[in-house]
Length: 475
Image (cartoon, rainbow, N blue to C red):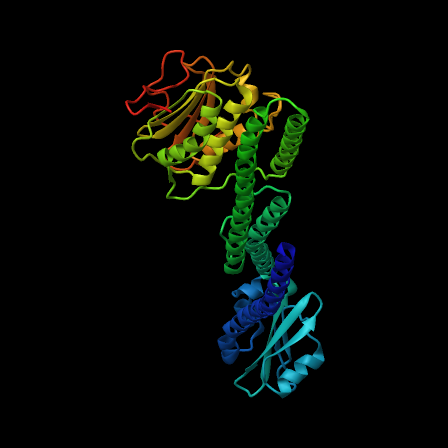
């Protein structure tokens, strides 16, 4: 498109320049010729008064010599003979032919004739005796074309400048049209390759601006659909892993016998199949993070709801459970189902990877710029916290799909927060979920960005646990 615009502009400008410059060049040439012959007529008229007074050779020679054309040898005077009484007078160098002179005498009008090296002006002048004298002025070719070449060069320069300027303007206009189209095509390719953050600046001509707006709306819709799919995968883990954990724990209490062994084997097989489904869903998940709703949810309410479920299992396994900080509403900018899935993933890990009778606790701290959720246990801890937090790592604990901490991390990072693993005061693992309250993370903030005020209430060398509240309760 860009080259097409340049070619069209070039063709139109060349036609306009030719249409105007060619006639203008001819006019300039004609004006130069008229200027030369006008000057010759003025020179010829200068000798007219002398011819009207006298035809004496000496007087005429002095008069011719006094003019510029006569001094340059470009003037000649032809006075015809007056019978036998007075001979013809010829002054100067004659260049015109006899035929041209006779024609001017018969029809006493000024005329021009082509001669070698230029042209001559034949100007008739009436004498007192009724005869017609002719003043001949020689006009060299150089004088006829004087200044024409320079004028033509100026016209050519102006024409080239117009052509170059029009091409430059067309190129800029082409860039203004082509670049948005090129960016739109590039963003479409990037979106097709799975880069869901590809967007197009909404600029350029009206049509391309509308196309960019439509493309961005389409990309946002695609991201939203994939985010819904991701939420469905997280919900799948919530719906399947939680009752599966209960089933495994109940199967463990069936005692000995073939039926009990078959039940435990079937539960283990079912758990492996569910793990395979979860891994497959996670591997197919696009690398994108969807923004949560503006309203968010009540963290205290979600914690109470999930602890009501898990406390029954904890009682069966003789686990001591403590919950703190849920006595009043604590709003956070996360989706309720995602926060519930994150808590279920962490609490399920406690039941899955710690022996029966291991105590655990859930603490909620509400700060000015963040909500902190702490899940602690009295187990053996995690040997390599960084490996456990690595995206997609499934080898942190035996039999783990790696989805649990991945869900927790995405919930925290969607608000500009993060997840940390450390040692709890109970002696085992403490997982801290930092949920930012300053708005969603901006594009220039990388992973691990510390929100404003991070570190307030930290214990020296501790795990980031804040002071315990008076709302704690043993379940």
